[in-house]
Image (cartoon, rainbow over all chains, first blue to last red; front, side):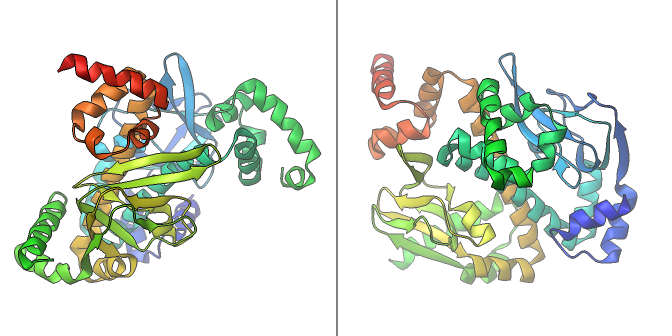
Length: 198
Length: 200
């Protein structure tokens, strides 16, 4: 698990051992059962979570429908990030879809770390920028790609999630109707390029 | 540009930065050379599709539109008046070809910092690191807020709230851009405009 932390961080920055020693004692290991909520809509997000094992979803309610905005697996960060950074009540819920282990850092710990190390503050800037750009990218993808393209792109990049996550959740994440999604699945069999990747 | 006018823009920048960090007059004077004041004509493309964005811009005067060209036509993602930030974010941060276009609507003055200068500022001044972090956090929060507003409000509410918070826009911006930004069909937008007359 220590390795997971190091690997995640090294995607963004070269932290010294000294910095890692500051972060390590502040990380909490949290375990969740399948279907357990990490964060509920309406409460303030207390943690930033790095997924060590499992798959999770982040969603909100549009009327009575759930709309999924993120699916996270090992090595990904997930939390109700806007609530975490703003201190406002969360609009989103975060739920484990498999038995899950996350490495979590509280808001208080993060503030302490900012004060202790400039390099950690830099890491935070880069991670938050990355979160921001993902939101921007998702918005642009919805404008420029049609349903079929979004489906094929997703399968290309997330072959493993197709196996692990209920189909209706992936359809919701891609903003594709479940019926359409079932129809698109035939593309996987027909197109050898995509099929080999899955 | 007159010196006095320039000074106004520098003051504006200092105030903008102080929303995020405690930056003294002395520190600000050291930071100033990293920024540029850029004067742009109206209807000029700042970054075209396929180009790499070099700047983060704060609109000091004028209006900038950020949009995407798709098969159905243009989709407006942002209309930035004075005090707002505008640039092609993904292209700027990832140093790759932009998918979006930024273009001035009016004659515009931008206070800009280049990618290179921003990196130098980060490496030279620890306080810049905090500025960068708080700044991108705010952008992230605003983006999420807009997402939920458009999702949860009715078309009528979206229209009325926008007109209330941006009373000048209808005079300054072609209607079709506002309609696209608010994700309202042009016909519906024209119909909604009657709501404004009745209220006055």
